Length: 180
Ligand code: 2AM
Image 1 (tube, rainbow, N blue to C red):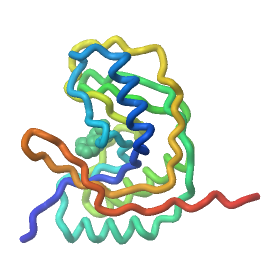
Image 2: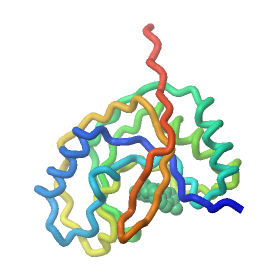
Image 3: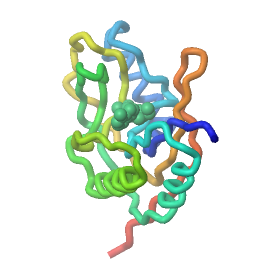
Image 4: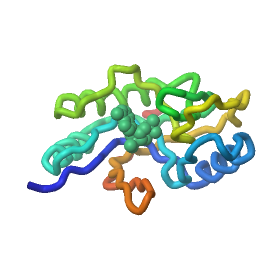
């Protein structure tokens, strides 16, 4: 039997935005806030699949390739701390419908293929710190970065020598918004 892999669908942050976020994080949070997420690992999870077989991964990869969704932009203008999960995050106050629909389609396909989905409402976010279980002084606002989503990807999460790495397995483009 082939090994299971920990997979998820996500939106990547472009390298320029990764750098901006990392600099802003360093300037705005004390060093002992928690475990900072590495720049290359910054992303917005669309659907978490968990540890799944190659068979299920193949099925969901084929499905992802048939999804028809449009490009969208979102403004990273929100910030918060979930003490229970220890996550400090940035997100958006107004999630575009195209983002919610893409996540919803991926999550329902994941559920239909036996990947347990959280019952909590989808809250698009970029995790900045993990293991932040103590109170965190949250900056009043983010610099309102714009994220232009032109595609989405399937990632594998691995843990080697004390480091979490996310490897992009495949990406799919989002379609241009038709001119009216
Ligand atoms: P995050 O989106 O809050 O950062 C890979 O592990 C990614 O999947 C991480 O980005 C992580 O959290 C998200 N993730 C991990 N476990 C999850 C779960 N049980 N439900 C939803 N998302 C999860």
